[in-house]
Amino acid sequence: MAELIGSILVLLGAIFHFSAGLGMLRMPDAYTRMQAGTKASTLGNTLILLGLGFYHPEWSLKLLIIICFVLMTNPVSSHALARAAHMIRIPMTRRTTVDALRATRQRRRSGK
Image (cartoon, rainbow, N blue to C red; front, side):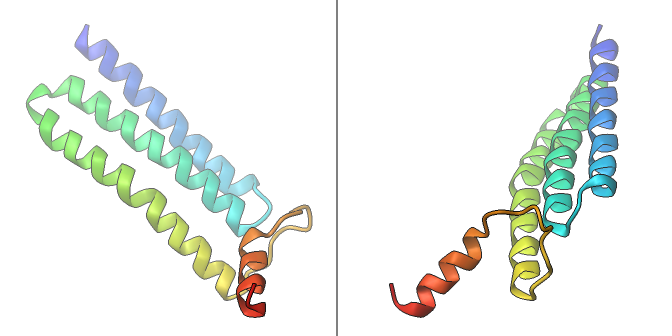
């Protein structure tokens, strides 16, 4: 039974990794690609590591530590990359209607 649950979790993780790759191909600009890749790969990594935990229960503590590391570092690194891309003025898609970071930066410059 544990092998079946582990296999299902690994398969679900692989599906999320596939959707991350598909999102990287289909999204219109760097910011949405980054968001699609980060969210799906974080969940995909977590599901695959949980599935491995069912296959090898003796690895559970190590896998849990890795899951915590992925959950902490993946969103933070994505956020840092997005801010850096914004700072060097990587263009957004024309369909983007709100640029909150630019508006905040303009308010700071004007002293409000």
